[in-house]
Structures are given as structure tokens and as C-alpha cells.
Length: 303
Image (cartoon, rainbow, N blue to C red; front, side, top):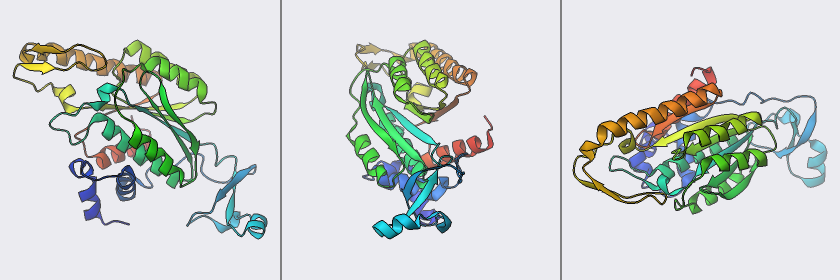
């Protein structure tokens, strides 16, 4: 396991931006700070047998299926119904607005969201639970089924690495689509800048809740969006098919900040009314600290 000093070095977002490979980022983040903070409420062995899974170091040998070992010479554990109940799905917004990266941010919103997704996926698999992934913009671009196999991480990372921010988003209809696709109750983790109509977003989230999913919303924000630091006449390039605008940002700042605060409050209140975890997170935050803070609070149920 890496030392604390090594983790501090690798977990700095400016360093992460220079490191190739999400798997390394995920491993450093999870092993250094997050491992052990979030525990599945469904862990343990119940009476009803469900399926087998491969042995992992540290597993209780009392649950090895020796008959299977005798036939295959491979070590499998009996997995019971209670242990298989926890499913997680990572919903990654890959729309064009997620491409934005301000001068103060070492990562774009999409790259930062990928780091969160990779870290949480790694954590879930370390717990021997199952995790799947969907990427979306105006439609679902990829859908990776949930699995608890350690090797599943490679597939998740491959899909993330191939995902680019290019198209317009349509969050509400996408959530309705995915809510119907996810047949079993799951922890649904949304990673998005929520660049869409609030009513449409909240209606989609309600659909997940109607299907009895546990929903977590990571609202990924660039600090420029939060602070609007522009002072010189600036050309604002329209994202998601919006036009370019040349203007003096000082004339817009007060109105913009008011609207941004109104927007985030509406999302926060809407999530709270649905008993959904709302986690605003800016791309200049050290990712390890942000995740540790959230998972600690989630474990303590202090929101």
C-alpha cells in the first residue's frame, strides 16, 4: 500500500491531470483515504444461497465451496442472497458542457467526474459488491452491466477513457429511460453538471426513487461557474448548440451569480425533498478530501 506521502502527491488534482490511466487514480484515491469508510448495509452471509464468486484474499474460508474446488481446482465462495443485494450504477454525463475547464482547474468537469466514477467503482468492487456504468448525453451512449468481478474494473475504465464530451444533453428523458432499464434496486450515482431544465431533471430523479433506487447526485462544477471571475470583454463560446456571445462580463456578474445560486438551491431542495444525497463538488477540490468527506457523512447519515 502506498505511503501517506505518496498518496498526498498522487491525489493532488494537478498531479492527477498528468497521470495517464484512471485505474492508477482510482487505486491511489481509494487505498489512501477512502477504503473502509463506506460499508454496504447488505454485507454478510444469510441463509439463502444465491451464487458463487471467486475467492479474494481476506475472505472467510468457512464459506469456500469445497465441492466446486474438487471439481475445478479453483477456490469459490458461496455467495448468499443478502450479500448480492447491493448493486451500484454510475451514470456519467458526457455532454459537451462537461468539456469545460477553467484556468483554476487542473481537470475538465468530465475528467474530474471520471475520477469520481473510477474511485467509487474501485471501492464497490473492493467490497465484493457489483457496479455498472452508463454514459449519456442526449441518449445513452454506453451501458455496462453490473458485475462484482475484480476484472470488471478494466471494462469500466475502458468505456470511461473512450467517452468524449461532444453532444447536447437531455437529462430528464435519459433518467426516465435508465430508470426503466435498471430492474433491480440499486445505488444510482449521477455525475453531471446538470446543465438542463430543473423540472425535467427532478422528474427524472423522481422516477429513480419511484423504482426504489438510492440516488446520489454529484453536481460537478467548475469554479468559474461558481464565481464568474471574468473582468475583460470576453467571447463566451456557446456549448450544446448555444450561440457565441461577446460581452462585458462585469455587467452580467451580479445577475449571473444570482441565477446560479437560485439554480443550485433549487437542485439541492429538490433532491432533499426526494431524500436524495446532493453533493456539489468543484473541480479544484482535492478529490480524495471531497470523497472522504462525503462518504464519512453518508456513513453517519449527517446531511
